[in-house]
Image (cartoon, rainbow, N blue to C red; front, side, top):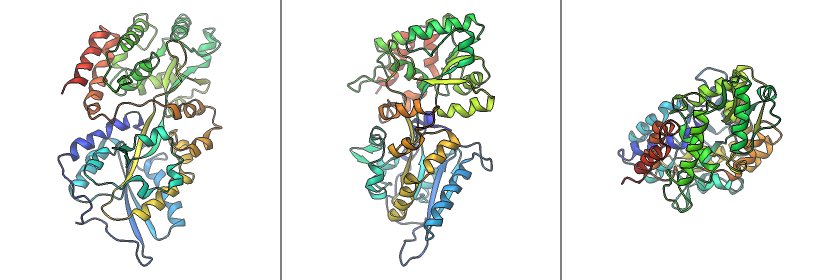
Length: 422
């Protein structure tokens, strides 16, 4: 499950493809059969694996088989051949396919923009019906555009909220989750006094330091860029934020050595009852369930003076390649996917969230998902449309954890230099 870094992950594809060249819509191998005379058309699809691996109950292969079987039952002339590839390998393998002229018809992964540059993709309005396009969450759909034209179709999304252990809160005499940083600190002190080893789980290790940091920045009106679009990693707001976080760390109110801790480890600790509060997403829930933790709550993430009215929005993409000329068949498959029950299946299987208003409505009765669903329409995003993000993001992952150990202004200043370097 790589939604947390999905947008950035796919940028590796851009860098690889930029040296591969493009054969655009020209022929040359591949699957060029057309839907003429009622004959069968095979769509080649490549998808990222959100599950535990091939053959396991929650694997991507199991999910896609269910979707494809249902689609083919209703569309017997269209066969969908799905190849599921591990997240760690998909970008490299797809780049090789493109280089060899063996492009798929459909690709589901973390980024689309590199393929636009090479002229490989259909425009969204060529492969998606207006009623489906109109149901997309607008803020998410807008990120599928390059120079004002949509090519990437949001596939699934995720958001962030605060999880808190109700049993530990009761033990510490805390009646409700914190809404502000001051309340968070006071609650953390009560949890520590009650014997909780990690009052607040703070993962600033390389797995997703950019996400945890962004949530804290948002709570103080900060972010990686300012309102004008300029890099602002070392803004006064962000320096103040990390100075505050450093105070929590120094007081022993967080995960020890946060810069060395990945989110999965901290989530597992929360599931084991060792952590009082932690920021997480719907994909955290299976980890808590597997650990046997049931009595926890979900709330908006505390900000400096009020709970966040936004959340970190993350999405992966699905796109259609134009080489094989299968726009009509792809449109049928996409329309089926977005108007059927696939979004519900994704949520049930992986605790990922839909990208359509209709999908949100279908899940709105789920109490644990509601805080995430509520935050999606007003989500904030990484600046992944800036090509520089492909360089800045890894640097953040590697070094920003040091801002709660060393001098915050110095650490953030070095990251600012990386962002501004030509």
